Amino acid sequence: MNRKQRINELLKKNLKEFNIQIEDNSHLHAGHNEFNGKGETHIKILLKKNSIKQIDRVDIHRKINSILKKEFSEGMHSLEIRII
Image 1 (spheres, rainbow, N blue to C red):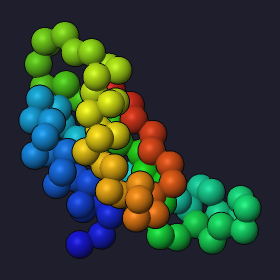
Image 2: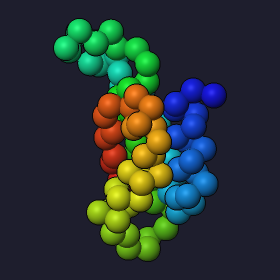
Image 3: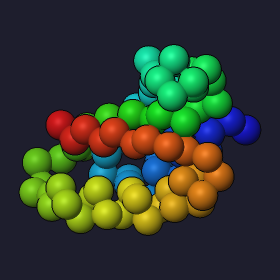
């Protein structure tokens, strides 16, 4: 299972109130500090609310960072989170 798949599984399990889309943006950083653009190191997460219920964006960001702590320790470098 690759990093995108692992992240998708973890977030679907823990954030049921959202539709989740995961993108690997590593290729956009090729050439930066001799990075080759591979390895699923730069991830973008797009969350779309399933309901009109108010959410605390800071709490969601904290929760995601906590859920993905292991991914950061295993080579993930960058995480972009968008909530719509």
